[in-house]
Image (cartoon, rainbow, N blue to C red):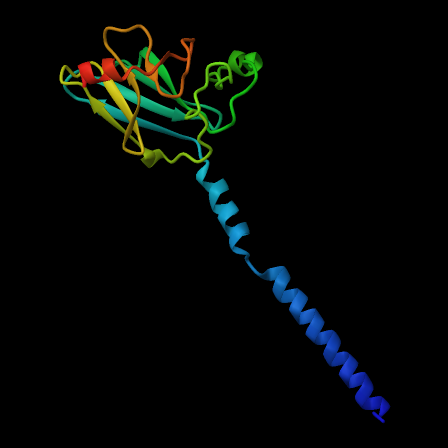
Length: 181
C-alpha cells in the first residue's frame, strides 16, 4: 500500500506534468500559424516608380491593398494613361462607388476579371518593366512574365487580368505586344 504522503506527491507530479505539457503546446509556434502570419505580412501596400530618362516618362505601380494599377505619368506628374494589373482581394460583384467617390482606385469586379486577376500575395519585387524601343510604351512584367502594357498610340492599357473591355482596360493582345516590344 502506498503511503498517503507518496500518493499526494504522485498526484502533484502528474498535475505538474499535465500543466507543463499544456503550457508547451500553448506556446508552441505551429508551422501553419507561422506560415499564415508570414502570408499576412506579405500583403502590403506599396508604390513603385520606374523612370525613363529618355522621355521623362515614369510608370507608377500602386498597390493599395484592394487593387493594383499601373499609371503612366509625365515629368510634371500628370497622369497620361493607366491600366489595371492585379487584385489582391477577390473581385467584387459590383463596383464600390463609395470607395471610388472617396478617391480610391476601383477594385476589380467579377464580370471583367480573368482567372489570373486574383493574386492574394503580391510583392513589390514581383514587378519589372520594359520600355519599348521608342521609349513611349511600357510593358509590365509580373514574376518575369508579361502582365500588362500601356501603348503610346492606344487610349487604354491592355492586361492579362481582364477578360473583357472596360474602364479597367482592354484584354491582353499577345500579337499587339509582340509588335511593339
